[in-house]
Amino acid sequence: MDLHLLTQVLVGGVLVGGIYSLVALGLTMIFGVMRVINIAHGELLVLGSYITYWLFTLLGFNPLLSLFVSMPVMFGFGYLLQRYVVRHVVDAPELSSLLLTFGIAIFLTNAIRYVFTSDYRSVPYLTGSFYLGSIAFSIPRVVSFVIALAITVGAFAYLRYSRLGMAIRATSQHREVAMVCGIDVHRVYRYAFGFGCALAGAGGSLMSIMFSMHPEMGAILNLKAFCVVVLGGLGSYSGAFLGGLILGLVEGLAALYLASNISEAVAYGLLVFILLVRPSGIFGRAEAN
Image (tube, rainbow, N blue to C red; front, side, top):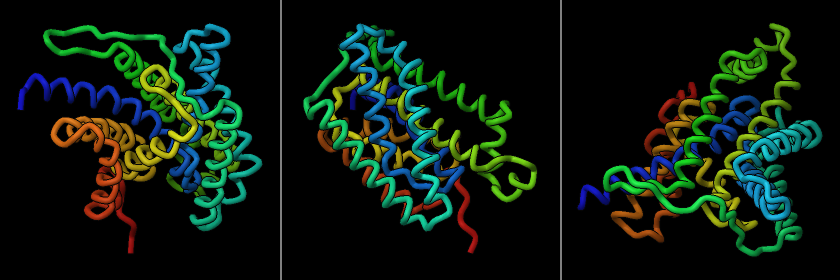
């Protein structure tokens, strides 16, 4: 195999994997804090991409600056969604959260299809590539990766150093102890779900300048996000970051060595493999018997 071609594929995989990491970080935050499996996470990402598309199409808004709109809007949407809907399944069996968020996903998909139609849409903002040596770097992917990395690092810093971030981590680690220490865990739930939705919205905005969008693509993105979360370990923020990069690399290598049309199926195979070999993920801890 040509080393130049392999290097090109690895670069592309890392750039896409950075977006996967950002999206999965929001999903793992929601699960880590509330133990709610959010099947609608992919649809929230699609909603963020459509916010960017219509701001660009109708108002000529810079797609990168649209992050300052899509993230607050998705945060508010997630905050209200948790307060009035998702809160009812926080302490319920996991099947309840699966069914509820699955219903939310169906509702969002059909609402997006009804409002925006099923046409494929794209944001032709950044095009072309630049070269470092003989390796081509797609400008939209590089810009999206840099911004996604900055948001991810900012989210890590916020979780580590801010009072609310420490409250989120404390609630994720042990809810009862957090309550004893005076933390309002129900308030934390709302903010954590809002943050998770905001990160999904950011991922959707960045993906809109890389790929075409349509209402049904949420299911595929949802699968990839879950694959990343399971790969890194449920509830592990660092695992979500590493898992996203790994999935991007594996997809790129599958397209190179197998076929380009089979790369989408890699997430399925990787998910099954992880569940069989190491169900707790790379950074996850095995359940006590």
